Length: 373
Image (cartoon, rainbow, N blue to C red; front, side, top):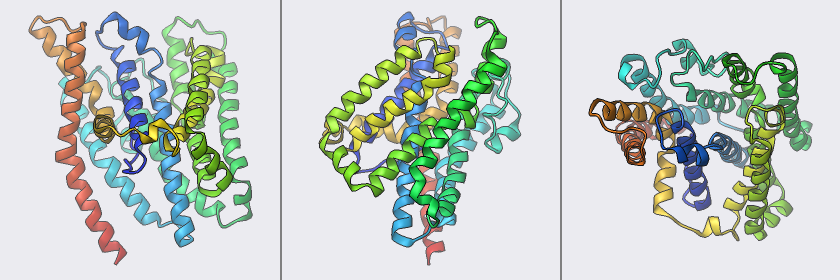
């Protein structure tokens, strides 16, 4: 959600756009909707996993480059940039949820301190307190931004950096193991049609950071190889379209395994397979030989730049538009309402851009300049 746009890597704009469209279609199923949304939006939850891979790849790549140039990472500059990119728009959305009941897509909001501390993804009872529940992924990304540079400062100067790919691979394996243990201890044997099953599945498998490291770790891993392995980088640039095909084939296999999203197989292995699939597609997007990197699109570039604010605000905007449709005796479940809702999400994100993101980006640039003097 919060990856930065690059003028050179056009392929990543297409993937950010794909990710936000997938998320929108998946979440729209929770509102009144046309029947066909159930079919095409079924695997939209993987849009968040694509965002995770993108974040892991881009943020780690920036940190690797800084380490190579300066021999260290400026934590102050990194955290300052992340703060001004993430927090103003996030806190404004949180303000809307806390002060304007009309904006809330559901009734009950989790405790405010969990949002403020970016820990809402732990113990999130989505069945009873599902308002602004999509902030769970922002919590994971914020925790990632906090810990990754500290981890690199410890590992890169030491002998452990020789085994960096092994360490990241162990993070992925640990997530798989923790999901397996959690399933066997807390989920197995429950009635899959019961609210209690879904409450526990989301709370203990889907939302926690330690069970969702696959996407971020995959992004960091490919960021490492693109930075430090000339052979890997050469292969990527020579085989962009092949990597895309491989990614699509793997993604198709992932969707087959995740046909029942909360099955044991999908819960334990599905997130890892989805992350690897999107990892291949991300590599294709940055490959010089790929059609993704060569294709320039104003539409995807703009939607990619708006993706964070769309992600933050889309549920509230959809809820308000559909509520207004009902008050004026219009049909909220048809395709016309869907189009208006999507346009409303774009319009809302443009307001975020001009009144929140751009002013705070200017403040950030001034502060970074002052601190670098």
